[in-house]
Amino acid sequence: MEQRLSSEHAHVNGIHVASESSCPDRLSDIERDVKDLIGALVQLGVKRCSQCKQFFRSSDPGALFENGEIVCYSCIPNWWSSRSPELSIADRNKIEAKLSSWLRRYHRAEVLKEVPEHAPDTAALQIVTTCSECRGEGKLLEGERCRFCNGRGTVWIVVPR
Image (cartoon, rainbow, N blue to C red; front, side, top):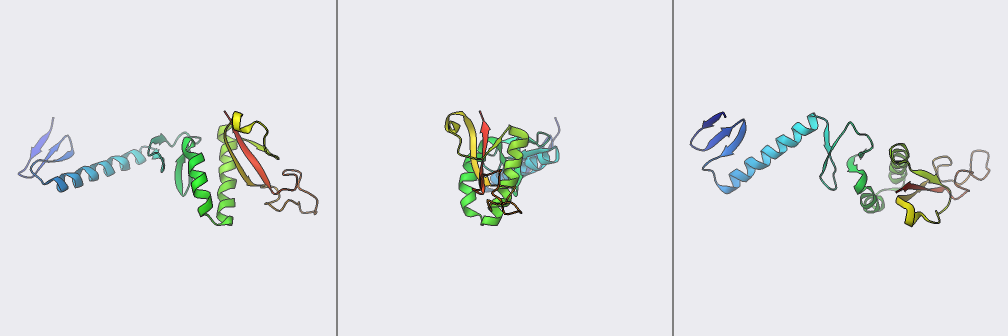
């Protein structure tokens, strides 16, 4: 075990340890070491959920939703319900499209035209989003009613349990 001691600091296996420093100095050293450790994890391909603070491998694309914030699948419902009212309509529509695509790709989400009858009982997650086919207009280019949302302009994204 490598140890280098000075009157104020010690290094044990490359970790900075304050020996006779004040409590605020030691706390500052610990905070710096934790920040360095988190930085090292990021370099190894590990990312942290902005909500629950758990770490996930970035090699698993279904574990984390990234859109300015990194959010794990488990935190999506609470994050989205608190975050979406804070967004402009354009930003919300953009993130909804990205979120629904991510949910469909990695979590077997289904796009439904109408409110699912048994969704509260059978869904792990459900959100209402703007229909990506008609962009929320309810009509297609030819002026006919959008068949993807039945002219409502919105669809349900439902992730089964």
